Length: 109
Length: 476
Image (cartoon, rainbow over all chains, first blue to last red; front, side, top):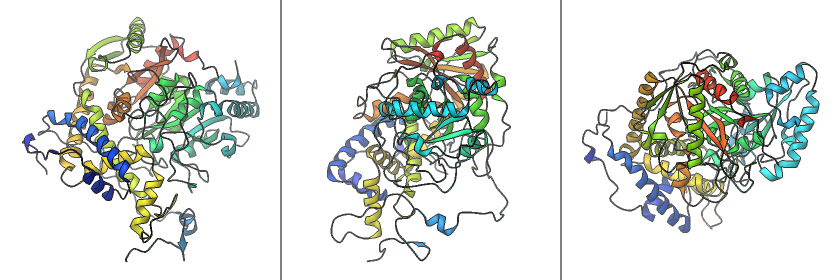
């Protein structure tokens, strides 16, 4: 379990969102972003993150996180074989396919 | 009254006593669409092109937001990245609608992937508000709300992650309900924020809302988050009786910055309900001011994860960079997503990726999940004191197209009163409660505890039947 008993110990953003950060995030998101967009997003993210930092004024050290609002857990079903999409249906909307599989550009240089 | 102005309930009665033929209704709806869709852009494509599977028994034209799968028909999510995608299956709600005699009209416009409060981020151009075509219909289910308000369909489905049914219902002068999380199956709803998303009705009045919820509610084993809770006949809640009903007034929802005409209309509505015998309970939901910040962490985190599947491999758009020697799989992913997603989708993917990234997960995402708990606890406590909570749906009436596009936070604050219900998973409805000086509709919200849809419908119906607002129609 992660403890945040000391709210000061949070890793705080001590710098503005830089274009380098934007490029790092866009890499994680597999999203190519040009220079003009990177500049725009740096400003937007900075403004939004500044806004959401109001959450830091709350002491949540004793609060459990909510990932699901309803009182339910471990939903099981029987492992029975049922009809599913055919290979043909599953491949129908792919731009490229080959021998019953998705075809993609080369992975290894 | 024109055929396209009738409610589903009125239509069903007329058909029952043979005053109306389904074919005449369908013809009237198609004619109405060819006349007004060029003005509203509520449908991404002309609806007659996607009218499907209507047998003689199918009478009610229902509009489907374009993030809900209809087998064999284009489903775009308002995005370029799903270019050409035709789902191989029906969403659970579409199956249910077909079974209940609805003619399916797909392709209602929306903010791209439901990211927006104005319907302006759609790749297919903005929808327009039938009450004033220079203004937004709200969002993200803006096409659904505009289509119902303009008589382009009898009723419609939308989805609501932070207010995306209720805020457009409010802006377009109609009724919109976000059910309890788990009340309606999300099977076949293209996911935005999986812990927040819920499908719900947009209708001309509260009776239709109850009728449509009767059709779409219920457990579905294909959605593990749908709850196995019996679906009552929601029309039984429409009694006009609110004697002794405890209506909570949360002080945090009646604050400076709200358009004065909105406050006046909501306060008048409270007086109407008081006159009907409801008890007014002043209360506090102290963590309200943190809801928008919490939401924009939780929702974007979930969205960035959900949208990872759009990579150009299985379906939709695939693009390669035009730069020489950039021809690997990674280049394809990055270019497909760059060309396929619009600016708001990119902004949310970036924000969601950032708050989940190493070193920031605890400071942002985990903290937001904890504040979400506090917000939920506020409601739990409040519902010990009251049965239903009343508030404005949105702080303002509809704004001009383009007005908030360059200011994401101003746009996000449009959902300040609707977001808490999603974070808490509770049911909430918006109904019309008046018009401002520019003749734009004002929305009134009721919220209740989980699975108490009957309570919000009961309060909403009592108010609606005592006032004329739901009878007004936009003139186009």
